[in-house]
Amino acid sequence: MLKIFLLAIVTTALAAPQPPLQAAEACDASKCKLPECRCASTNPPEGLDLEQIPQFVFLTFDDAVQITNYEIYTELFYNKTNPDGCPVQATFFLSHEYTDYTKVHELYVNKQEIALHSITHQALTDYWRNLTLDGLQAEFGDEATLITHFANIPQEAFKGMRIPFLQLSGDNSFQFAKQLGLTYDCSWPTQTFRKPGLWPYTLNYKSNQDCPIGPCPQSSIPGVWVVPMIDWTDLSNNVCSMVDACVDIPDDDADKLLQWFIDNFNVQYKGNKAPFGFYIHAAYFAVNPVRLEAYKKFVDYLQGLNDVYLVSPSKAIEWIKNPVPMGAEGWPACPDVEDLGCTSQTCQLMKEDDPNPRYMTFCGSECPAVYPWLGNPLGEK
Ligand SMILES: *[C@@H]1O[C@H](CO)[C@@H](O)[C@H](O)[C@H]1NC(C)=O
Ligand SMILES: *[C@@H]1O[C@H](CO)[C@@H](O)[C@H](O)[C@H]1NC(C)=O
Ligand SMILES: [Zn+2]
Image: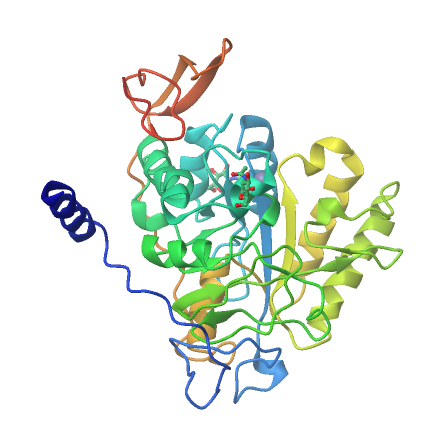
């Protein structure tokens, strides 16, 4: 009995201190102040005119980065700059399986944002809904370890996460994001706060955001930023959070498709300039070549607007914490990354409970013993 008791004390002492969460109270803007706190609100940062506020655009891709889609990304984003002279950034919510980690390394050193999207990407939504802090650590915390190791990028690279199928787990994923030292989560859609759009906010106080794929957080989790996924609408006025989930789209013609992108963009751009997200999966372009043509034109269109910034959510949050007019002093610095080098290696590895081998390309010299997976992110014996 005593032994069990002592063990319990030791285990508690070893784990990161986790004070119990308090129920979130209504947000009082006079107490919740930048840079640490922002109420859930459609108001742009105070004290600025709309003409002084940048329109941030988040171009994100979910799932595996592979050689084929990597080449599309280089063509779309490399060697392009925002009005502040900093590189254009897209964000990659990475899942592990089939990812080519040498390409992840390249994306990182070319100033793109690498974010977490789980090791297994398991298909049961109930699994994500039920995940505890330990389960989240195994899927996302260990994924950070895995990517750090095989893409040879620093652990501080990771600022954000997105849960597969956008399936929230109440307080857990946000509490976990805080524990891991992430800045934001970008998994929570809003249908209600589209027009005007909901700006990113912190979870110090109760959120009034609608909860389409609950359970949503109820507790106060200070300092974690929610980057709301503001829904688009398709031609029949159905809402969609991931653009590739929109159904009634003019997919047969690049110019019509481009116009539909612009119409959705204008809901924010001609409104309160809440950051505009264009959220798709890596496979989006493979389905229909018209999509890539329209997307390229859209990036060019945005590059023609002198108040539009194609950035990662973490860069936008940096600005929101300390909002200054475009062109003024105090504007966030350009991303500065260190290239730790990458020697490409491809190994054939066996995956647990699977007769088919996986080919994994990564930065390193020695093959792991097995295919890295849940509970064994470095693929050790
Ligand atoms: C970007 O510019 C560098 C240096 O000029 C060049 O080597 C590289 O090929 C360019 N990349 C793309 C995708 O245009
Ligand atoms: C999730 O939790 C529910 C309720 O506790 C349980 O019935 C279900 O089996 C769990 N599902 C998974 C996949 O863990
Ligand atoms: Zn996914």
